[in-house]
Length: 280
Length: 301
Image (cartoon, rainbow over all chains, first blue to last red; front, side, top):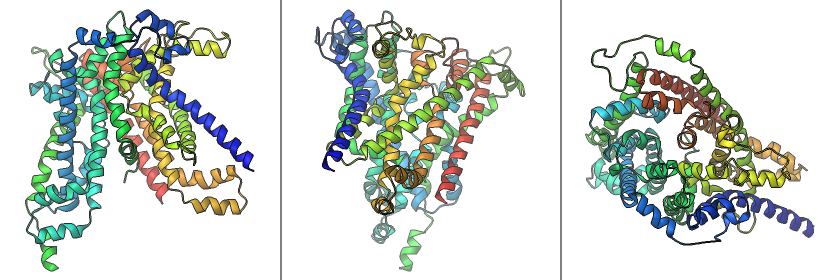
């Protein structure tokens, strides 16, 4: 009996380790290769296990290279501004409407709720061309604003906040109303801190989406001045001859911050992804 | 008490003030472009209209062109091909992984974290990394592995450079990146199954397989329906991998609906025609979403 269990656990671990290799090795290769300075060696290593090991000529040369080849600090600054501002504004604007729909009374509320739910079905990809014409008319092409403004209001996020606010006990607000607070004050001081998990969830989802977005910035940016990291990455990847050491150094710069955040806030990341699956 | 109720339900301006920013932005950046897309699909609108010719209403011309455009059918076919291959593999694998990481073993959270980790890596980076693995020579990582396993019996595969394997390459890297997402959703379903259901089943003498078939699977239906339908919808939105790696080629073998919208609208500047594709794309996603909601409701009842 004991032996049987041992055997079962052992085979489970073997399967688990097999999948661990599949899911971790590409990321390991990316980070390891970023430090390999000999381009020929990188390509030679690809047909052996050396591809996943920090062997050969190791150092920071690739990182120095990409800072010389591309305006990396500028790209990084743009990406940070775009991602952080989108997250913050996204949380504020969508939670406001979510709260209004969940708690306040006003004419047309039901209609607005129906509209928001219907808008969840419209994929951004279906409206990107008219959107491009609109922002062109607004003289927003080649700005940071155009990479933030259109993605602030989002039906799905509004819906997540709406559901979260519905679950806040009404008694808490009733007490606040007796204290003479109005709905805007209640929203700011009482309701928002109570839906912290939803704030974290939507921030993670918005942040991941923005950080790696390529399609929209490709369409609305022309010069390097306003371009995010993703476009720089794409630029480096398509420049011939491809230098994989540089490409992976750039990739590592883009991915390592997310991986660190992921390792610290694992539970939140996983919970936020799971929450997109529990739709009403 | 009455006073509170009165105060609570008083129609004050707060509701409007809180609603205005989001409603305004939704109108300008979602509703308006959506209406424009439908309108443009009936015109010969170009990116910058020729001042002499202007934009004309052309009725159903764009849709007629679409029906006779082999590239459109190729793109639609590719989306269906991607869905037919990627979704079953991804869902089965996700189910297997979810069951694995639901076992009571030491260090199981480590494995869960690792399997999930590709989900947080941007698809752009995943695509670029895998394109190196798909190097079409005998030195390519995946070709080396295949040659090692089969003792060199399989011909060299050209992966992204061969029309017959380009889409398959994209499927492989997409499954690798996305499966952790489905795993988590299925896992949350597994964890919601009460332990005593298994206990009573095993007292009744049900084997492990029967327990899986008659307890686990029915209890997971809701999660599985969501996972399957949402991955089908995701498959129809396929674009980043194509944009980064193949630009629809070789020979349109990786052309997809969304990439075609981008190509004909942004690169070829035919807004009218691209809008017609966008409308068709919307109708497909809309139908899938309705089916998703119907199924989820049915399961709930």
